[in-house]
Length: 626
Image 1 (cartoon, rainbow, N blue to C red):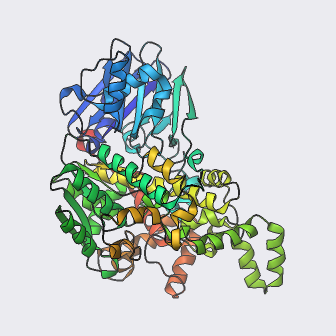
Image 2 (image 1 turned 30 degrees about the vertical axis):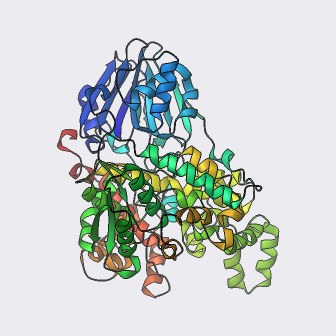
Image 3 (image 1 turned 135 degrees about the vertical axis):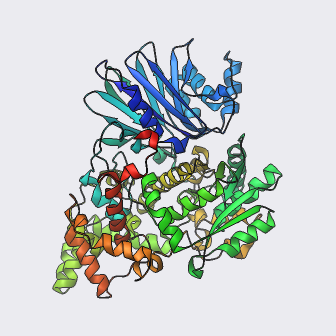
């Protein structure tokens, strides 16, 4: 796990080496073990930070240059099946000087070209320079686990692992067109970011830079994997899932450094702990966050799994003071306003766990692929279908609204014009959302494109919204908070084979007996007690209300200062009327917020703005970057 910066000149003007070194220093947390630089004439400069995971020797150094074939690469991530690919490439005549997956990736590109992407099982973002043709090929993994950003001005194209790398080169500006999406959904996904001129290469996309122009294309489409095989039995689904997941955990355990497991106490992380303990045959480290507030605490179940699989368990109690200590650094590393208060807890956990390990396995992706959320339930989907009928038939909406008393009819008309499948991810009352949007959500483009992929099928719409619009924010959290602590977070549920299998299992099997995620839960019965498997889903909640909204203490003092400040109301793209309405309703007791909603997003937005645009970033940047 690493980070890089790649700069390609548009004008044959060599990029300043001192600036490149500062840009690379901004991401020292992504790779504290080594750094490297490479340039080829005036047209390209590459910089790299290394976190040594595989082949700890100097042979894994990057940028890696293949002089014989005129190629250079910077690569962030892991190709988990690199050993199998290496054997295949050796059989075709390739030789290798290292035991690194980087060299395998470079050879695979040399032999198979763009089609090498179809063979990779992993999480990756890379840039390959053809030094003879003076062309660049870049790609991001199929699911978008690893980040890859692109920025350009009149002089240069810049590719980077984190947006903050650009700051020593140029001051960035906020992009107000993305603010509504963030305020409503707590994240901005697709190619947009909240920084003007900075785009994210989409998951499953690759591109070429030739003659100064960037051309991007899709090489993997998760939509194509959603082909429910209705003839597949529940028993076969469980058997295939267990077999494939065991294989996934096995290759995710490939590491030349110490690794452990993030143990939440839920089914997903507990299943990973069980299989990883069995496969390694040693006492694994497991790590958890606990709360004194009982409603959020799952330490009982974490300890139960730890005891059963004999892990070296580390429990870290989260408090309001710790939360406040880590809040601003979390925003700095996350680079966007935080999606959820639990992001701060994740950063605290990785900071503590890094004292013991370098790689940690986590359970992201299981709920999205195996339908673990309550929004996949029969009742919720039935409600979505009813509301979808009204959404797609505006004439009927208008007729119904006239039959109701004026105020109620107007409210119905306002909220029924928003897609129920798309806005289910907002967790916000649509009346409050409408106060902000007033019927115009045309700026939220990527989510609408995903909605169209569902072709008005409520189940398809819901699956795609979760897999393409919800999951990216959790990948972003895992990458940023892990890398903030120089730790690699791996997600064994998130491979193309795992998603391809899950997306062929019919809905009736995923929701067997009305139980969400029933296939995975049935598999888990071999490894976890039934009362733990089938208990009510808790999720990774945080006492936001107790720590921030209640009067008294550091959290509430900062919240009151931020949320009532003049500065937040003067930011371009912020609807101060909407914010004041929410605050007024809260004071009147008509609006309650317990976790990641409007108040949290406005609060984090202002803190983010102060860090990245009011000069606050210089307090967080390494001295070498200033």
